[in-house]
Amino acid sequence: MSLNVIQPRPKLTGREIVRIVLSMTGACLIGAAVLGLVYLGTDRYRRAAGEAAERQAIRDMLGLDAAARVTEVRQFLARGARRVVYRAAAFGDGAGRAHEVAFTLDGALAGDRDLSTAAPVPKDLAPLGRFFVATRSGGTRAQRGSGPLAGFVVEGRAQGYKSPVRFFVAMTPDFGIADMRVIETADDPGLGAEVAQDWFREQYVGRTAEEIANLSVTKDPMPEDWKAALVALAKRAPDALARHRALLERERAKPIYAVTGATISSRAVTEGVRATVDHVRRRWWLLAPRLEGQL
Amino acid sequence: MSAVKVAGPVPRARELILNGIFAENPVFRLALSLCPAVAVTNTVMNGVLLGVAVLSVQVLSSVTVALTRRWIHPRVRIPVYTIIIAVWVSAIDMTLQAFTPALYAQVGLYVKLIVAFAIIISRLEVFASRQPLVPTFFDGLGMGLGFLIALVTIGAFRELLGSGSFAGIPLAPGKPLLFFALPAGGFFSIGLLMAFFNWVERRRTRGATAEPARAAAGGGHGA
Image (cartoon, rainbow over all chains, first blue to last red; front, top):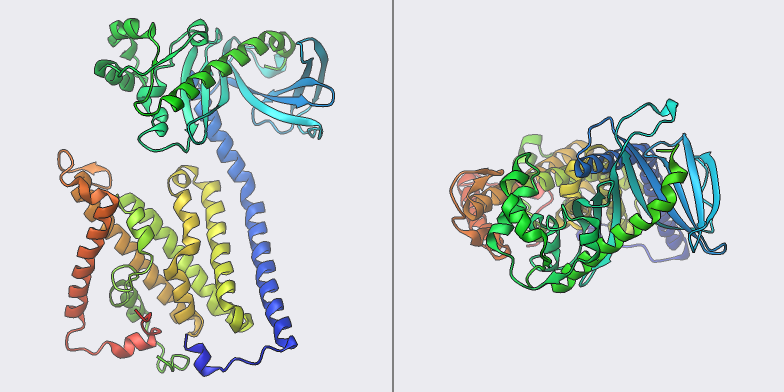
């Protein structure tokens, strides 16, 4: 503003240009250094906070206590070798023992070995996704005894109306739905984004794996009493199941009620849940015997 | 306005803070950063969270500019100010994400937007780039407080009328005037509160000549 009046600008000589470039470069370098330091100082805590939030979400969704053990199974595709590789390790354990199992694309065992969790992932392994296996506390890790299986939590994806929808599905050991949560959707508020609402997502909970496999979506309006019951059920009060028993019996046999005006999003999520359950269910039978000692 | 470089007596801390809250309140008097002020103020809590974030970024950036202006080339001062603001915003963003993830989930989106807030860069240009360190600190504090108070006032006004509650505590049944919680209601709220602040300012400065203080504070924003 008035700076120009006080100090007439020096002519833009070559020397002046060099000074300007140095000034900007210096500012950028110092800024980058400060940000780098802050990143180094906070990254550990950010990861820990993210992991604690995921751990808590897994416990909440499966209704587990703090003593339950969670194993993270990461899935990779080895393109060149045409293999699917699974790496399992105690969740959040950066220095322990991991177990790697590889299958060919038709499901035959192709590799089975122990490695350190710190072992780097080879470049030819493309990440496909991950899921969590929870076991109830039974025996210590030193005894290598697996507790009874408590359930699975899997991250799933579906292509919504405009944007991908990301969700978590929690399954009981027999692959029935224990809980379902939408973690990310950028569809329109009031339409596609409504799939994240309690009354919609709670429709999946309690259905068995067979019911999920044959699940369809209806455009019929959702009965008001069922909607109210779903909102109440989503709060997981201990007596809610008993209170809404009659409604549950009536509605569990019916298809998923689509969000009004967002049938595409509703169908996409339903199909996503079905595919996710199906995938884990088929893979787990191959994987479970190999992971006995790791869980 | 042309002689701000040699601004006579250095303004005192109390004047500077009151200047930011009343005479040059960023939202109500300077009408700067109205867009976020409308977007996030449908509840009191949102107003508080964004207000505190802006307050910290304003003070930190003002102090940084006051300390480093000797080395900033005048031709590229605006880009350098932007870098300084962006560095502080990113640092605060990362810190919040690491240590208060629950809070970050609510305000993360707004914190990043602070980089583009007109009020911060305009204070760097009209004040921090030409005043000593201590007054700059208090100017940043005053402006930040002014913004915080404005956001909280608008938030309280809209939440009370629109949702019938205060900071999430329900006070009235139902939604008395839902209109005020919607975006259009935000503009009306700011208009009404702006009129109120103009009235307060007129009473505050009646008789006294507030002009020297304003000139010392860097003058108006040409509004």
